[in-house]
Length: 393
Image (cartoon, rainbow, N blue to C red; front, side, top):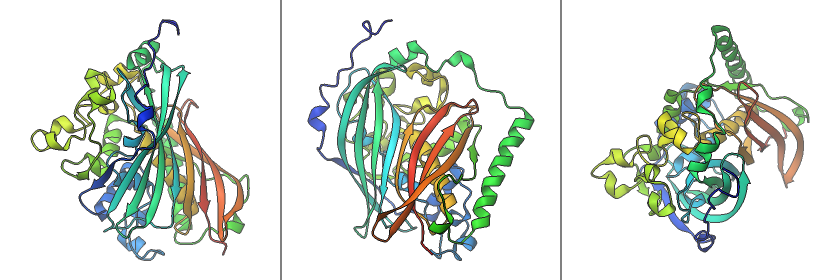
C-alpha cells in the first residue's frame, strides 16, 4: 500500500474540543500506604522510603511518602482522558509521552486528590509506524484535598489507523521474543544490585547542588526482562483498575464515540455497566487496553506482542532520577517522549547524565538530567530531560 492509497485520518471533530474542560477524575478513597507499596513494587523501584515504615520514620518525612511518580496513579485515566477527546473514525491509541510540572505539595497516605482535565492541542503527521497519525495533547491538574496543586501533566496520545499499522509491521510478530541466557540474566541482576546499592548508600543524606557537575553519570538501572506477568502487575498498581474505585471519570464518552474500532471500543471505565458486569469494563480483558496483556490483540494494532504502558515508562524515568537525587531532592519538571514500546521479553536499561545546574527561580536551584531508556539491542524506548531541585547545603 502506498501513501496515496492509505485512508486519511479524519480529525475534523477534534477542534471543537480544544480548551474545553472535561469531566474531572476522582478516586473514591484517599491514598493508602498499601497503594504506595503496590505502586513501587509494580514499577520495580526498590527505595525503602516508599514501602518500609522502619526506614521511612527516620527520613525527613517521618513516614512512608509516595514517590512523585505515584501522582499519575491518583487519576482515573493516567492522563489519557484529555488527550483523546473527539472522534477519529476507525482509530486506536497508544501513549507518546508526558510532560510534568511538579509543585511543592507531596502525596502522603490519607491524601485525596481531584484531577481537573482539559484538551490542549493536536497535529497530524506521517509516521513509519502507521502513516497518517494524530499527536494529541491534554492536561491533567492534580489538586489535593487541602486545595494545593501537586502537579500538572501534559500527556501525548498517538491516534492512528490500526489496520495500517498492522500491515506495515513496524514491530514484526515473526521476530519473536529475545532469548536470555543465565549469564545475561545475571548481568541484569548485577546492574539492579548496583542501583539498589547506590540508593542505600545515599540513604537519608542530602545530595547537595555543589557536589553535582555537568557530565556526571547517574548509576545505571535496568527493568525486565518484561513479561505479561510484570505488565499485569503494573496495570493493577493503578487504583483506577480496581472495580468500583472511581468516584468520577475516567470519561463520560464510550470507546465507539471516540472512533475506536469494534474490537477495541468496549466499555472500559463504564461505571454504570461496572455495577452489573464489571469484567466487561476491565481493560485487562476488554476494550482499548486489551492489547497490552493479550498478544493476539496486540498484533491487530501494530504491536508484535504484549507491550507495556506509556505512563509506567514515564514513572520509571521519574523514579530513576528521584533515586539519585535522594529524599531531599524534588523533581520540578520532566519532559519524556516514548519512542518505542517495551515488549514482552525486552529489558529496559536506564542511563542518565547531568547536563548542568542552574537557578530555576529565586532560591530554587536545579540539576538538569538527560535520561534515556534503551532495550537490549540499543533501540530507544524513551528519552527526555528531568529537572530536579537539590539543596544548597
